[in-house]
Length: 454
Image (cartoon, rainbow, N blue to C red; front, side, top):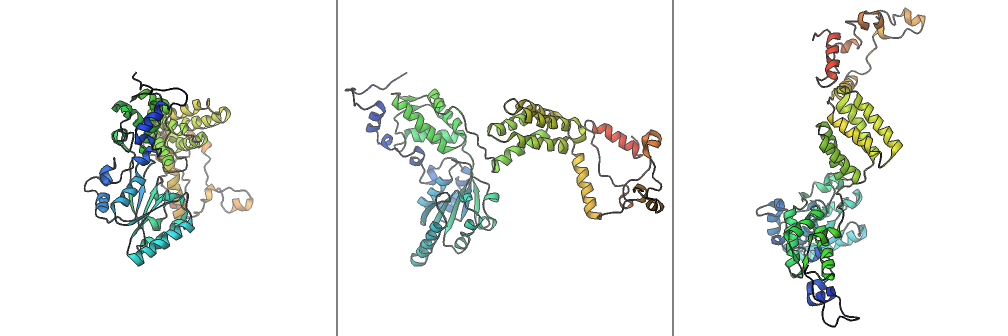
């Protein structure tokens, strides 16, 4: 493995190899985070997001023509939301004012808005206000932007990792164009990293790095450009300090042993993953089901929450196609409460695989919803007299229970032809078994009882 040679005079007080390299190369002397140093200043330098800033795309045309509308930039961390805001600042003729919803408050915001109004009225100058993490503002704080966006005092650019449908108030959302940014593809991250390795603003060629090594960094970053550049900066520092001339894949792996899972237990990604989990169970795919389960468990989700969802699923989506599914879910819930983690993963995993491979039926779900609709539509219909309980002589004299046929006295234990619904609903069918699993047998029995043959 090639090593850099130590400079002469390497006694006490002599500079380290990394210090010597930093003294030779201005790019290495700069301690500014690499992600900040490599931030694009024009659309031509933006990596990825071609669906927004590619040639002829709406946002690209708006920036090029200096016609930027108020907008919400929505996307995962490190996808380039702040970068696009800076590109707007460099490419348009408006004043650009950055503001953090984490660090700033209403008093600072009022001062910015007052200054923007003054610049507009006195100098005819426009102001673009960039609000990072706009979802951190509450409803009242977000409402403060409305009149100033409406009258053109500011062009608002809000950045958020949260779904704007939930994180931004509707009146403000209706006045902004939403642009959704995507996590970077590995190829985009490799291009970004290559530029950082070679450009004077980055590492200035102080190290060599193969595409394989840069692809390893991209894999660790999981679509996050900022994380990719931070990993490169740390790995490069370690390599230079060790006197290396090339950044190697194994050195990159040592700087980041585990991947951080993109998952917010209270945000959109939580609902995306639980939705994928339930749909995989419903689709009878045990492999996808167990994968999404472990995504949630490894991200720290509450196993009891997942068990509750499986209890619901056992009745809602399996039902009488396999009546044992609910028993398995109840047993898994009880077993986990006795075991805890990690042993409790066994009954959870067993339950997931059972539910995924069980025959499916939503007939129970449909039945109670149809019955509920009938209750809402018809109100409290009178109980037929024959079904009423004759508790007293007076009630018996009034005809309560008269004509009731005791099922156990009938052939086969069934009073054939008897009607138990109110007269107004006679003949209604709320439960229609499927032909899947045990419900096939239930359906055959019901058809005989209903006199429908089969």
